[in-house]
Amino acid sequence: MTTVLATVGYAESWWIQILKSLVIFIVGFSMVPLALMMDRKLLGRFQNRYGPNRVGPFGALQPMADIFKLLVKEQFRPRTSVGFLFAIAPAISILTACVSFAIVPFGNTVDIFGTQVGLYGVDPSIGVLFAFAFSAISVYGLMLGGWASGSKYSFLGAMRSAAQLISYEVAMGLSLVGVIVTCGTLSLTGIVAHQESAGMWLFIPQIVGFIVFMVAAFAETSRPPFDLPEADAELVAGYNTEYGGGRFASYYAAEYFHMVIASGIAVTMFFGGWLLPFGIDPPTWVDPLVVLVKITLVIGVFVWVRATLPRLRYDQLMSLGWKVLLPLATANALVTAILVTVLD
Amino acid sequence: MTPLEIRRWAPTGDTVIAVQRGPEPGGAGGLYRAFGETLRGLKTTFGRLVEGTYVYQYPEEKIPVYPRFRGRHKLHRFEDTGLEKCVGCSLCAAACPADCIRVVSAENTPEQRVSAGERYAAVYEINMSRCIFCGYCEVACPFDAITMGHDFELSDYNRDDLIFTKEMLLAEPLERTPLRTEDE
Image 1 (cartoon, each protein chain N blue to C red):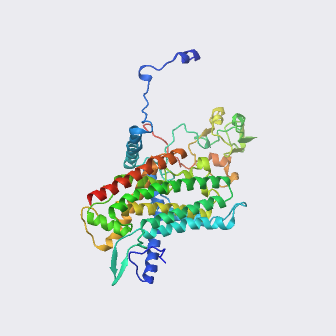
Image 2 (spheres, rainbow over the protein chains, first blue to last red; image 1 turned 180 degrees about the vertical axis):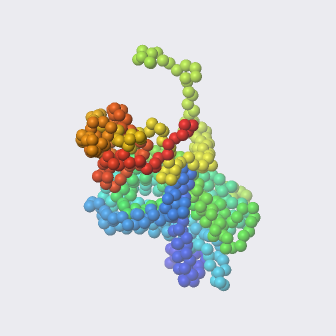
Image 3 (cartoon, each protein chain N blue to C red; image 1 turned 45 degrees about the horizontal axis):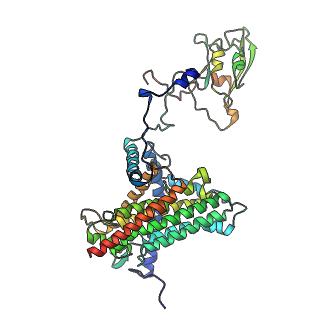
């Protein structure tokens, strides 16, 4: 019988895996309040104002205050809701987000106290497909949440979000095919290694793929200008209309986590992961910091775009996804494949 | 302009303002619209980031008010004798469109002179939760006994605390609001 499990590039002993997954989880989850804070502070700066600056020094504790406020709120659910699913849907959202973060590499395998440890959650041979699989499952979080709320607005919002996420996932996946074909591997560490040996970050040869990926990433993470799930003027609040307190907080956190993951994948695929430009070769312990700084910069771009572009209409969103991005991504994959074959 | 003039009015010369429109979607123009105009928008917002902020940090920094700003009322005394200017005529209460002023007058006696006139206001209350700060009381007062001050920070936790009595209105109000200087 053939195995249905993906092979893993490098696996440590079980206790290292547990330890490092804890560390990565903590680091990754700390990026969420950071992203939240950047979103609010930077957005303020883009609008000639300060953003939150009352809680803690420079308002640094604002996300803590936000989260605390949400967590101590009353847990309620509508009478028409389906209790079990209503409770489990936000958990699916946040869990899938956490799992996707595992593949973002912060460095190659390093020698820590004589043990080889890979600075990533897991390095499966299916690589980025792992992230896509879990981002596809995260749609269930929205769908179940919207449906189980037992409210028409939630349901409409959920349908809309699901349609958006599924249609943009196609373009997003295809936009990365160019990178995968160029590198000849799906493994994210392999892709970074290829960028290192090629001496060129892939956003230069794969500029079309990069643009398509970024646009699709905005849509995938429901960030403006594609924040239709949150178009409160037409949908009250989308799939999370009936949610409040901690459950709403986990949807909210999942959304920001998705942004961090999308930034992480963009950094790995197009901006050379832990590599530094101009041939600077720092010691290995700098690698994770490089990745974190790069992720932060990409999040800054997310905020920048949020400050700039107005929300798309629903039909514009769909036609952009299917009529523009999908053909572009397909053509990009095709041209890359031909070039790779010809040049080899 | 009379309605006839409006009908005849047609934009000419420098009254015409050309509106810049982006290209329509589709084709090469659409490509420019998707990328060129987006980049232009990004440049615009980035300019705002570089520009810095324009906001007042309100409780610490206050925007100065103009001298004619109508804030919380003040009752006045004569500076030389210390007698109240208010004679309890209730004209302010009559003028008040929000009906928030209550005046109960009493006779001055030689032993107890409170105001300069024949009578004085034994009770003078303004309900600040109803006041609309129109300034009619100030206009109605024949003795300039009541004027509008500059204080606008009047919120409180209790409605009862928003009924300002005569003592509160006569007392020198806390100078919480900066006043604009002439060149500002």
